[in-house]
Image 1 (spheres, rainbow, N blue to C red):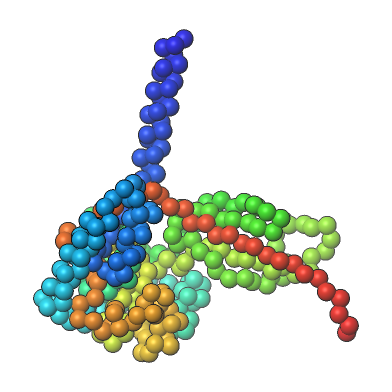
Image 2: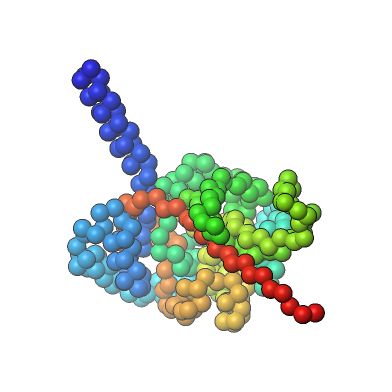
Length: 322
């Protein structure tokens, strides 16, 4: 009996280690990028046992990478101004036309001048300071070596958008949470719906209208923002890194062109809008190829993170004179 109990304890310990290991991923972090405080906070709050690491040593390695970027400013001065942006191969034009007819494309790229092009990966400017290596490796395995042009197009600009299962839960009388282990999971908007837009839902009386809080995913199209001669990668970081690791040098993508700050505010992330000169004016901004430079990148073990969206609402009723 004791022997059997010991085996159960041993099996439980093994399963626990397996579960813990499966919840660990490796984050590729670009050292030397401002602000330093963001890096120190990330290590302390997110990296496994990060609160035990010496902040002075972390600062020293960040400073060393920052000095290296200064070397790159001299050696690769203006490199971001020479990013290649080619026309699509004529054989890919029908595929691009199909994407342009996709409702996700029409609702996402409906404001600024937009085109399809083949862009050079290495010289793309990046604002993200990290990518998840496990996800990049999984994409590499899924894509396979030497993808043909059509496969490459569908990887970067997918026509199909499979949905992942989302955990939705009521946590209060007027509070709901939605959870998913995807950073692309996001709040969309609040929408007014007509009763005939609901299916298989019945209340205690006739329905007059519906206010719906919409959550979901982005369009998942690899796209860049062009300002003058520079190209900033806006979406598709993991795919871009996976394809670069597979030896691909140019990828099909959607290019949005901005000519002034007001236009940049319509499409770029807040971090870019708050300091556009850092990305579009400096001699040598961070580039996609930096994720592959051992002098800059650092591999950090972190726990898997789950994206959670909480929705709260308030209802008030009034009687008003006509």
